[in-house]
Image 1 (cartoon, rainbow, N blue to C red):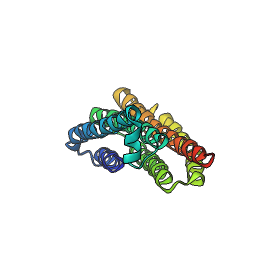
Image 2 (tube, one colour; image 1 turned 30 degrees about the horizontal axis):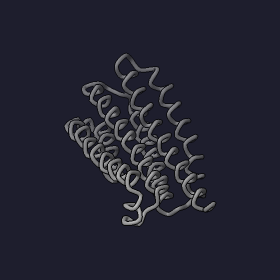
Image 3 (cartoon, one colour; image 1 turned 90 degrees about the horizontal axis):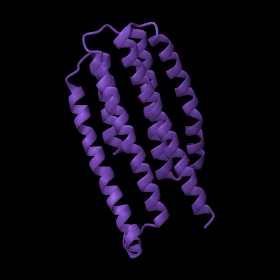
Image 4 (cartoon, one colour; image 1 turned 135 degrees about the vertical axis):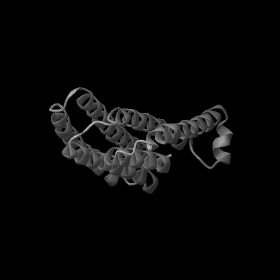
Length: 194
């Protein structure tokens, strides 16, 4: 799921930068793969909850299964925000958006992707310090997004609105990644107390 999301996010920002809007439809379609994978995780989690012995057979705890399900649900929501970005990038087709706005969107996008990747990394590495550092980095993303919003307000109509929605989704991706890091901390803390 992480790999698909990363590709979707990078492709849609590249589309915005190069004004090559053919990939937008493909990015939107790829979200259905994220939805299917989340559905699979949800099914497995529900099966484990209904049959506790299945957890033993899968060599997984109920707590870990719940954490996987929660992270999967967050990743699915991130996919929905990438679709929102794609739809708003499509709205900018044939319009002149200031290059400084595009550059700052690229920067904020990369930062949100890094926060997301670090949250997944901290989960698989069981790294609480990395999770805490990741949570702190969301403030930098929020400041950058506010800066872009200020620039967007100087634009006309559809450009200002579309850039505003793009930036809001990029910010939300970072905040969802922060949620993943918080879940990692909760999971690892509960493991230590057992």
